[in-house]
Amino acid sequence: MALDTMPPELLLRIYSYLDVPDVAALGRTSRTLRTVAVDRALHRTRIKVVAPSRVLHALQSDLRPNVTQLCQRNLLRGLGIERRWRAGLYIYSPQSVKQFETSQRLQRALVASVLTAHIHHRPPTPSFLWSSRVLPDVEGSYLRIARALLPVVRKLKFARQCDELSRQVRADGGPKVDAWLQRNAARMPFESERVRLAMCPPTQRIVQFWESLIARQGA
Image 1 (spheres, helix red, strand yellow):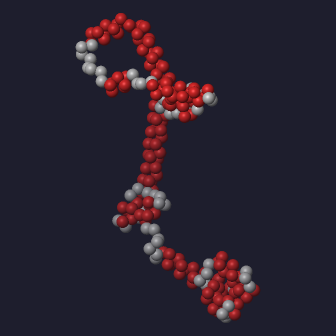
Image 2 (image 1 turned 60 degrees about the vertical axis):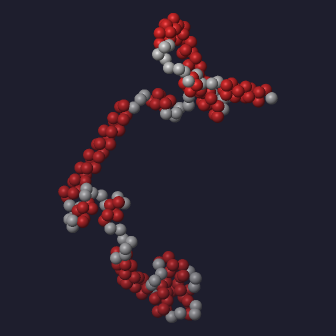
Image 3 (image 1 turned 90 degrees about the horizontal axis):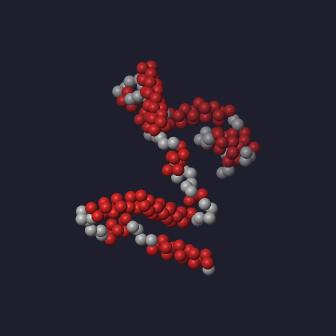
């Protein structure tokens, strides 16, 4: 049996279980279904019978959130609102509203004071940007140096600075350093291979790397 051949009473019964968009879509298929879709009895039944039954079912459903779930979703806000609800008290009394507003003001004042303290104690902007790697360093600003070689360039720069510092110490206080070494040589422990490598790291790998790089460029 097709829908066009069904009695209007049966069509109204079927339409009462459908939503409004579905009823409108069926009404576009034929003239008979369009006449039933705009019938006043159908919409009156939907308003008076179907809609209240759906609302009642939704209110009694297990999917309806309780007060605890509403508080967790931040839809109900207040101080001790769950405790008041379990105790059977009114959760939106004037006193509870005032307490919640006062707590919000105190929280905003606390956040403002913490932010102010951080702003006052933070380092200057240029040094902070350099230390946090927001701004590129001197090596990173060179266009002729690949990004993959930046760690090697930084290590080489650090090694040069260490060599320059050692030369300055030897030039300024050479006799003093020699006298200190002679005076404390007996108390200094035996220098192991690990200590020697930690104080004077090998440069053989760095030299081989640069030699291979030069050989590639020459080839």
